Amino acid sequence: MDIDDLLAEVDNDAVPQETRDLQELTRAWVAERVAPELLPWPDALMERVGGRIRRQIELVEDQTGNMDPKTNFKLIVIQTELERFKFLVRSFLRARIKKIDTHPLHTLSLHTSSPTLLSPSELQYLTQHQALLSQHYASSFLSQFPAQLQRLDDTAGGISMVDKPDEDAAVFCRALRDVGQVVVEGTDRRFEMVRGDVSVVRWSAVRRAVLGGDAELI
Image (cartoon, rainbow, N blue to C red):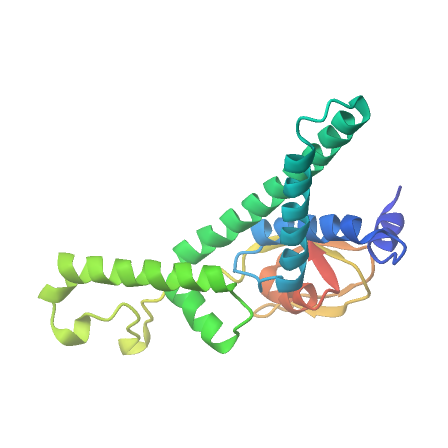
């Protein structure tokens, strides 16, 4: 199976919804682990995946204890699929939480301007975690500084104290559709990305294509 077959399979409407959800979850997991910055929360996908996991858990609990060999084999298959989904979801969430912990103030600022960045649970975690950190820093050493030096998001002197991810980090990117010309800012590098192309390029140069669904990270 070549790249054209794989790309065609992604767009094939004949593929069952649960299979498309697994493909989409896998791609979201890879993208979140590869992208240097936090990607928007896939609300619809995670809602479907969460519902599927709950239904499978209920089915396993209801059928546990049934001595029918066919039922037992079916449960083994269901549990195997369930563990695969659970692994992807856990790893996906860990990757997001790591980015939230690394750049909390930057993430909170982005979510303010783009409310789809975080899930409600992630926003609650970030808000409470940052509040605890601020209280700890204040009681440990910030309270001893002058008031104008106690801010954690100070931008005085043109220097920001807010850590940001490296948007120029290199990523592997595959074009799902014809992207067109890609311009690498700060350089004279320009190139065409057509369907099926795999490139190593700065994240900032392909961010729009990835978020728009025209390309994916690998």
